[in-house]
Length: 579
Figure (cartoon, helix red, strand yellow):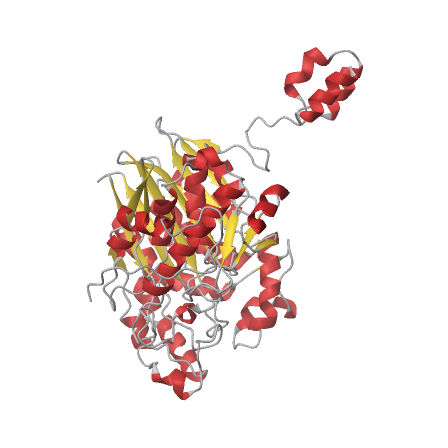
């Protein structure tokens, strides 16, 4: 009996129940269902995907997920559900998003069988000149306060999406958020944590304390928070449409507040804002077409990483091997050098997107990787020039429409600038501009900054397969690539692909900076083996033990049978649910 138990323990498959029953002489009855067995696959913490046929929603806030399902059950489209959920998240997760921020989306339209991309990011104030920064001895744009504020594009994004794909009236879509704002909701654990961390930084800005610090502090985990100011603003939008925000009382209040606090964002900046419908771009990775939006976002970095890694047999190397982690980190370094140089507003630059995501360019860049040694730095590629914290959500409806939507204030709660009684914070996305003259992403009036937030989508044989995203700054393209690799190369399901331990390479202080001269550093989540870490150090990598940030993931997969598989990981407070 002892020999049997020792063999079982070596295989990691004998639990306490098995041991007790084995001592009683009944091992043969239960050995296949021990307490340590995992029916749903991998050894890391995970759960089974959520399955449904009529509709699915996956968000980082369970109450927002439930609102999305309610909208779907009332006959709303996937876009309707996404808008309603996003409005609720702006209230319940002010640490990541809100109507003072920007929005990007990829929509699969079942009626025409194609993807549609929306860039709903705002532009810099027209009255803020490049010379202002030099005149005031600034070598970078501050992270908070009035200077990094750009036009908030999210509300216009809602109305663009709704006009093209909506079914229910906007009043019905905003009603749940208005009700929760007036009546209150319990603050979730992770949001309470980040809210509390934001207070010391943002409480000095006018309006922040009045809106976000009831009782003179951040709300605690489980406390009820109300935001009647935001309820009033959302009601004005529900009644008056997008112009209530960009041309009505809301715009005038933002203009008044910014002028009173040495800001530049004006009524004219808001009134002239517009979103753009754009064509998503893709690369084929081992038979799967992976789709991202082109710059001013960073989505094509994920495509560049995948193109480089397609040249290796990752399945043979193994998901937790030092060899795979090394190749991933080097591919990321190569892609991010191009990101630092070329990614910017296409209205101000002719960007070489087609070449950057091409297979021949990836072949050329791949040759720079030493399979045995980490590079201290790479230079950006030479291409032929032809002279942008967060929330992510995804929804799907009974008609087969799917939405991949991401929305953010940047730096968690944003700039700290909280205008009047409007109940929201303006974003600080303008910090992402470069103040280097001649840089593609150089600050200019009326220009969109480089953006980090990116939605993603995967099709196979021209049909929708996966709508997904991973929130978290420069983490996002790295995790987009890892999700695809986890599913395509390593055979993980849609839930496991997000729960699997992650690789994060950090190589610069700002998203548009070049890599540090020492090659940056690697962070690996806890369950990577110590042997993998040791070998990576021997290969020249600086490896750190960090609990985060590794981003937050939601996804919906559509099977060949038409079943939706929903996933929402445990790093956030979220939920996937369907019906």
